[in-house]
Length: 239
Image (tube, one colour):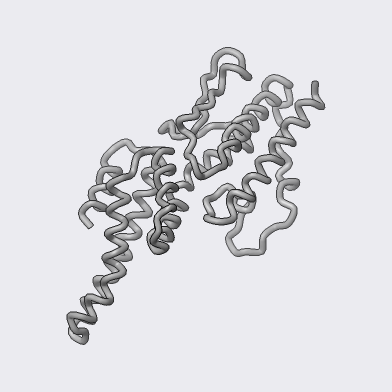
């Protein structure tokens, strides 16, 4: 418990990036659930034997133990996401389910950055956690945007898709600034053939820009490949 609290306090009191803050929020929610269980057990303590209390509290204690392991081992920025993804190889399905839940929440800011880049060519990365950096000097195609291989969070995307994503955003900037088509944008209606009927669904999620343990990699590959095709086709047609 104290190890998890220490991680949350460290993030709160330091200049951490969006990814660490998202994980900290997820861990805070886990501790809130733990507190609620303790309150429930305390209210029922008079009618429960010591053995019953032990049985009822054991799953929460095991989950807290797992949370402490993750809080101790986490890196920062995209490396944090990579480390969480590597933990999915753990043999305990309860641990894997918990890591998937935390990874879904911790990765949300990264997916937001990727979506913004691949749909508008813009970078919103104040903590320098993204795998693309912007240096607004020199030639737009060769100098302005740098691909940072060491900041690719392995496991969230297939390795080849990081560079595909890089070329999509760079291509959008090329169209707008070099081809003089400043208002051009991706036709998002072509990217989603059927709208999901699930409550709360949005275009970004439907395109795969969110961590989902099983569905994401297939959906995001299809989306990025179609986006890349649209960008490249427009550039070729304009030359």
